[in-house]
Image (cartoon, rainbow, N blue to C red; front, side, top):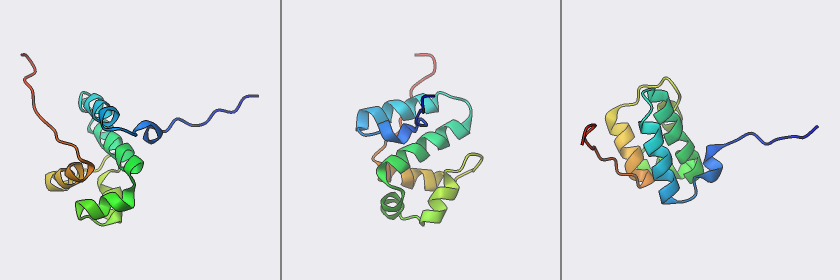
Amino acid sequence: MAKYAQFDAADYLDDEETIAAYLTAALEDPNPDVFLTAVRDIARAKGMTQLAKDAGLGRESLYKALTPGAKPRYDTMFKLLRALGIKLSATPVHP
């Protein structure tokens, strides 16, 4: 019987273009947990401890903010995305 490794998106988030595409796809889903999960995957790929330091957040606070079902504050997400080197932008739905 063949054994398969469990898929972990964080294993593939190793360059800025891939991270941007992954996060863009997550933003297209209406479920906010998909976005939180994507940011958590990116954070794990970058290293949670260093990211918490760079964002000025406690490590525990970071884990709590990125738990599915969490309702992180805007300023928390802004700090986190900035520390990840991610800039969000808006485009019209109907160009």
